Every structure is written in structure tokens, then in C-alpha cells.
Image 1 (cartoon, rainbow, N blue to C red):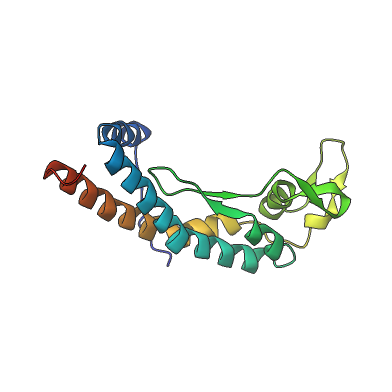
Image 2: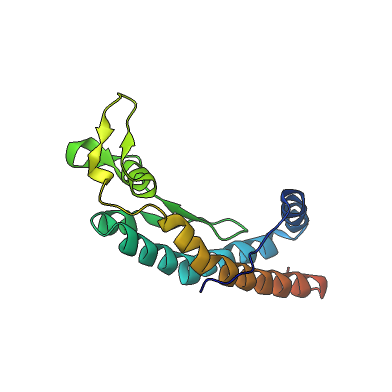
Length: 155
């Protein structure tokens, strides 16, 4: 779902939005966190899994299992864990880096060839798929919650 228009938000505006949400009642903030988590699970996670599977099929299963959503007022997704559970002592954070960058030079100075077969760019492809729908869904839910709060709903 790539379009020519991109969602842009000035960091100061984003900070103002978050500060504005702080003014909501605790129940309204809880609802915002729940809706953001639902949006992340419904829109962002499938786009990320699909993108990883297309760009790094050898590591897709491991990386896809490490995806988890955050419970913040803004939809968020975390990918990778730091525990070293894969062959050679690799963590999914290390796998994620290699699938994003491709073949790279490690801190020890050795070239990491295992990532050679991956096509870098899955992060941009995933972003192209989820950014606009997730932002639109979030704005819709935020407006509902703020309107309910302003009308004196159970908050």
C-alpha cells in the first residue's frame, strides 16, 4: 500500500500531542494504550511479518516470533530479544541487525557472511505498508477517546 504521500509529523508537534494526552484521566490514558496496542497488533505486526518473510526468509521464523507490541499511547512494535539462543550464540537482535544491513563487519573486525543472502530494506517496506493505515487508525481512536472524555464519559 505504498503511496506518494508520506505521513510527516514535526517532533515538537508530536511532543505536544503526547503532553496533551497526559492531561487525560487515567482511565482515558488506559483506553488509549489498549487501542494503540490493538492497532499495532492488527496493522503493524502483519506488515512487519510479511516484510521480514519477503526480505529475509531464512530468519523470518525466528524474527517473527520475537515481535511484540508495546503498551504505549502511540502504537509501537519491538523486534528482537537479547538472549542468545541461536547457533553461534546469536540473539534475535543480532539477526535483526543482519537482516536490515546485510553482510557487515563485526566489532571484532570479521565479516559476517551469514547475512549476505538477505535483501536489506525490509524495514522501509514494512513502514510503507503500515505507516499511513496505523496513523489514520490511531488518529480515529484518539479523537473518539478525547471526545468521550470531553463529554464527561466515565473517565
